[in-house]
Image 1: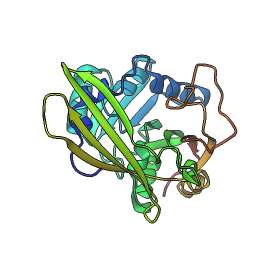
Image 2 (image 1 turned 60 degrees about the vertical axis):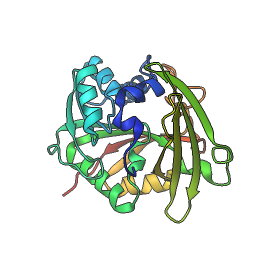
Image 3 (image 1 turned 120 degrees about the horizontal axis):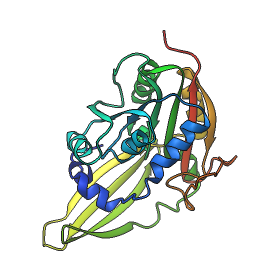
Image 4 (image 1 turned 90 degrees about the vertical axis):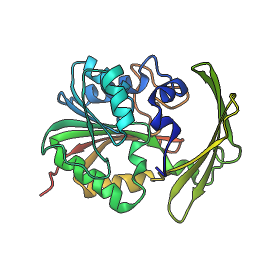
Length: 264
């Protein structure tokens, strides 16, 4: 992510902008873990405010939440206690060899690996951290959606919400940087108190489904599920009992992979 981020630096504002009272993402992740018989030790990589990590903890798992933002971690420890929270860079981390039975990576956190080297760093770190047969569960934007599709690119997205008696408005514009294989985001924040606008930039790596299969296999993972719907960020969203589709071309991508070959 480029520079400061208003939501990352203000976790309570983040939760106001993206409410998840039903803990949909956490429930979806727990369903994946149960369906594939994952062990109890879970690493929530890019845990943010800790809502999903706390849900998994409440489901009976031993959870570690990892994030690069100290503000997010402080918020998580105070508002979503239960898991252990640690600072770590998902592009390369060492939280102990064979320390986890599953790694969960939600809300496109994996796509903050912008280069092949960064993606290799994440997957190599996961390979070291996972016990043999451990799971990687990830949810993200789908690069295949942008092959000939401009639905998310044609018009800026405008959102408004109220937090601490102030009205906030965000205008988000997306564009595809084909050479870098990135989805670049420009977001402009305004509020009703006369504060000057805040402009922020970030980006996600755009991975194609077969590209993701290839890089996972290169790091010793066997893909068990790879599909577009349903999931916690799809429309309609995932509900208990839903099974994965057989398609992988909508705007979200979900993957469950098992570590079958441990790194040397």
